[in-house]
Every structure is written in structure tokens, then in C-alpha cells.
Image (cartoon, rainbow, N blue to C red; front, side, top):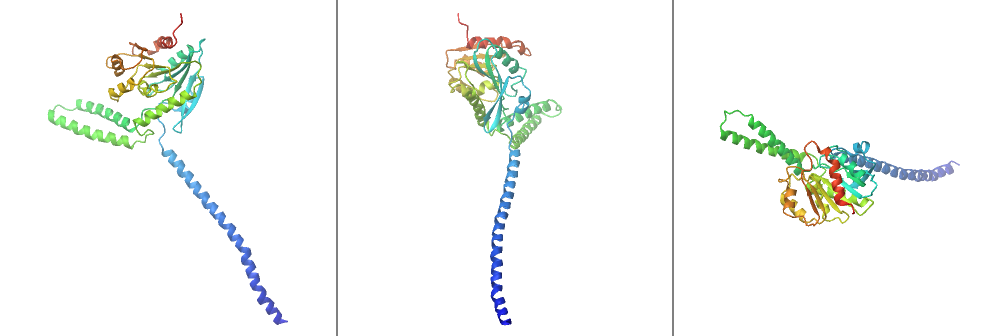
Length: 341
């Protein structure tokens, strides 16, 4: 009897051991994917955190007034949103309230202002709306890119140096003063350039800014529903220079109005080359002094190749622009849609 018990024990133990091993194996196999899933989840969380941190580091589009602020406080009948460079751009829309539906009008504020600025764009947009225009006012970003930031810093530095030089004592000789000024200017320029380079900027260059500007206008034009054959661009100050990159090629635009057009940092030859490519009817309204205005010089040279050119001088007196709004909104309307006799 004991002999058979020993044989049974000897035979059954290995079988039990094998069974335990086999039964445990699936448990080990199911544990491995769970660990892997936890590792993947941890990796995804890390990537998401890194992505959020990178997003915070990325510079935002610079505006005089943010889209969020404008969307909450404005004089528009509607607000539209454009997708440009994977960013949101706000557009204010004023419906045509006149008895005559004259068409669509895109009003571009001066760079550095905003679509609700009370100097010009706000009262003028409301005047156009009352005259029967459907008005669109996009929020145009500030001109902030490395070259521009360097230039602004240099202008500020030059102004400071001039003030400092005027306050220097008369005990220094003229040569010593001149040498010191030159050294100060070199150091200040280097510092301003270094500061501009370190400042994060959404726009990498002037070309980058111009392309973004173009995309805003092109995207808006595609979104506009025509209410007549007229699509007028009214561009104020520096926007008048920027818009020339679009008015020479977009067939939807019918008229161009340059309202006190300006340009600051570009060679006049660049302006002349852009003007030579224009074909649309243009109405240019100038403020004093016009003789030094590069736009005015180009019109004097007859560089704009169109038969429909109108020039108006002495647009408004300083600090009295609000008194003129009704006047030139009617002038522009009468030019685009003259009364039929």
C-alpha cells in the first residue's frame, strides 16, 4: 500500500506543478499589456503637457485690441470669424441700412488702431452703413516683426541720444562730443537690434506680415455675399500701402479708395512699382502736407494706369476729422454709384 502511495505521489506532483505553471502563465501574459497601456498613457500625458507648454511659448498675433475684447464691445450688427494661418481673425459687419443697396465695402483701419477706433473708422463705417453699404471691418494685426521692431528701437534710441546730446555741458570739445555720440549710437543700435531679435514675434519678417495681411483680405472677400456688383476697398493710412498687393490681382474688387495714404519705412521705388501694377478705378483723398506724400508724387507722375482716377486734397483739418466724415463718405459713395440723370 505504501508503495502505491509513493508511486501516486511521485506521478501526481509533477502534474500539479505543471498545471500551476500553465494556469499562472495567462495571468502573466494579461499583466504585460496592462503595464504597456499604462506606459502609453503616461507617454501621452507627457506629450500633451509638452504640447501645451510649447503652445504657451508660441507668440500670439499682436493686435491693438484683442479679438476677444472687440467681440464683447463693438458697434457692429454682426461679428464674423475668419481662419487665417490657423488663427482666428475677427471681422465687424454693419448691415446696409439705406434705401438703396449700394454694395459691399471693406474698411481697413490704420495700422495700430482697431475696428472700433473713434478717430475715423467707427464714425465712417456707420456713415457708410446709413448710405446703403454693407460694411466689413477686419481686425488688422500690428506691424511687429524683427525688422520693424529693430527700426522702432533705433528711432527711439536716436531720439534719446539727441535729447542727451543737447543736455551735455559745453566744456567738451566738438570732436570729443562727436566721437562720444558716435560710440553711443553704435552701442545703442547693437542693443536695440539684440533686443528686437530676442523678442518673440508671430511674424518672422516683413514678407510674413504682408502675406498674413493678404490672406485676411482674400479670405474675407471669399466669405462676402454679393448684394450688388460693387466691392469697394477703403484703406486708411498704412493699410493703403499694404492693400496694393491685393488690388492688382483680385478680380472681385471693383474700386479702391486710399484715405490719407501713408508709408513710412519703405523705399518710394517699391511703392511706385506696386502702383504701376494697378488697373482699378482709384479715389485718393489727401491731408496736408501732400507735396511730400509719396503716393501723391506717384499720382503726379501718372504711374497709376487707369482712366478713372480722382484726387481730393485738404481732406480734413487736424483734430477736426469727425466733422468731415459725412462729407467724404458721401463723396466716395457718389464716386462709386453716381446718380443717374
